[in-house]
Length: 510
Picture 1 (spheres, rainbow, N blue to C red):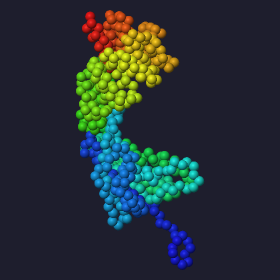
Picture 2: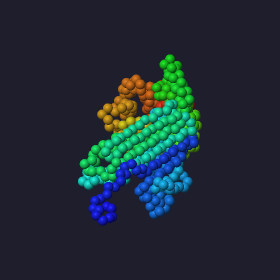
Picture 3: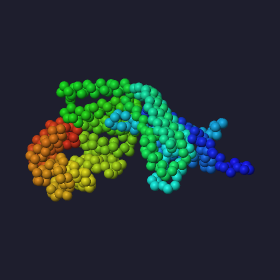
Picture 4: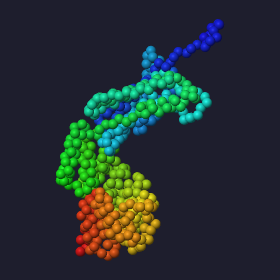
């Protein structure tokens, strides 16, 4: 109300829906794709929002304000770390305050295995804030939304080389009585620019409008964040790898493949992919560890254990506390008959991931072969506390073997660890062969019932048959069974390498 005689009416306040409230300009710069990117952040506050930020800067320390600013970015970039000092400056003639800050983003790009991509999340936090609603679903009073006006955020990704095959753009627009939102993506060969703008058309929301507003938000909100996708191989590398894969497929079609199983053929493909990724120069240390571990596993599947060891030890040198690396090294050491190392790495993997039963299973087998049969039995019993391990039957099979080795009753040992399913899956028929509720012929029929899985199942069946025959004092028959296990050629199975090991012991004892 104007303070003058005779004035009784309220004045209409000026329309602020066209006023710029905040503008954020972020730039995510990669010196190398394999390096942690630098996030250059610039936030400019206008009008009342500038006044609010000035008051915060006066009333708190620079460290406190930095924490608040970092928290906004941490909602999008979880590993964000401030770099250098915060800078603030007044923007002349605009009643605006500009804040500048740099951040490092450790482990920003993560590896997506199936698609051969590097992924990095992004988001428009400055646009999310005015659109965020309270959790209340039922209201009787209007809801305060915040300042009407324009909120703008720009984000640019800059890469040191051409990343994409072609340029492109896309738009999204949402217009309704309460807000407008416009998002634009512009992709170049070595950069991507994302621009977003929200215009709040009202500062309050009536209870009757809440449902419609939520519906519009559900459509618009997913456009405020996303994932940047970067190929883990250069364009030239991708083309070269495609040529190699086509050649491998052609050799397989002609029947000239060296792979004896589909798993080995897949291991050859995955090995080529891992080698290309490692040579790309695009992997961070953390992503390189993942690929080195995968390379080691594929090499193990192809009976190239020494090369696998080298790959896994390189991964371990980069990240000594990586549980996956220790778990893979434990399997590798078991295959190379280095039981103490297998036990050591399996124990380390368990310390890093206590709920992972796979290293415990590996450690149990290594303990069994190193003569520590009682600790092996204890590990198997611990693994069998997990219902999934009970249903898989493998731990029960080894518990039977270990119990017999200790002179105990194998049938009684596994009685409480039979699968819960009405129709238990393989290798339950092998466990039935062990406890006398089934025969070898029945197990053999079950192994052959699935043509695709038959070779692997036969490898396992003959290995465990050999174990039963050894326990029964039949080394000659055991030798024949272990040889049949090896003859399947399923080198990716643990039982294949263990059958080789058993056969070597029997041959040396002759």
